[in-house]
Amino acid sequence: MKVSLITVVYNGEKYLADCIESVIGQTYQDLEYIVIDGASTDSTLSIIEKYSANISQFVSGKDKGMYDALNKGIDMATGEIIGILNADDMLASPDVIGRIAVQFEKHGVDGVYGNLNYIDPNRGNAIVRKWVSKPFTLNDIKMGWMPAHPTLYLKKELFKKFGYYSLDFGTAADYELMLRFLYQCQVKAVFLDQLIVNMRIGGMSNASMKHRYHALVNDLKALKANHLPFPLFTLLLKKISKLRQFLH
Image (cartoon, rainbow, N blue to C red; front, side, top):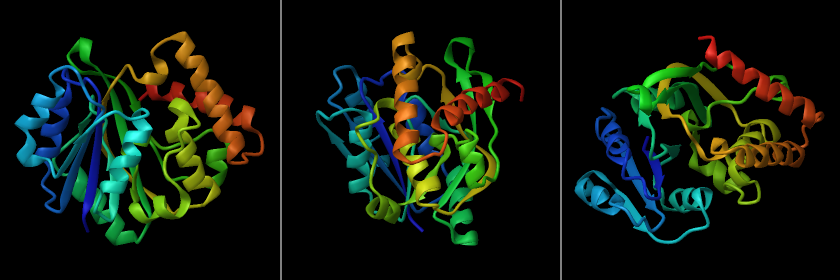
């Protein structure tokens, strides 16, 4: 079962090598690695060139943002399973992809997700939050639950059937896709109780108060688009639920 792993990058020279090396270190053999660059102007392209022997497919050019680039990568992917690894992040251990593939084969499911650590690069990559997930029901989604998007691996056929990342939801495009797949279309996904990704803090939606406001607006828009019965209530619980990440 081939897994296609996609990294989207723009001016990511600071951490891209760590990201790529975490992929190179995987023990799973049937792994396709795709890198989509948004026409970087720093040393990103030279880093990609350095690791070119370990990159299955690569393209560089202007795009309409991260999710447009991800859609390009999904189109290019030749694997049955699609995974995403942000350029600032790292796979947590060499067996991650192999364990994910086993879950697909063992359970015959359309999606697999797991746990995530937030790490602080300014404190020696110290763990500052832990996103420990769980098996879920549709009611959990209504109550604000969601998987950690960077840990979610999905069958490619789902994107053909239910659509790609929508560019109408800003930084909430990943949330909207998860709502569409897991809630609206009731895709069967299982929880793998393993740390999948170490994610550096400081993402797009948390960059400033303005970005956070727009993230809230887009989250609400995504909930309404997927017909959650009480979208404001779900959004409030979604934000409250993140407090638990500081308690693990």
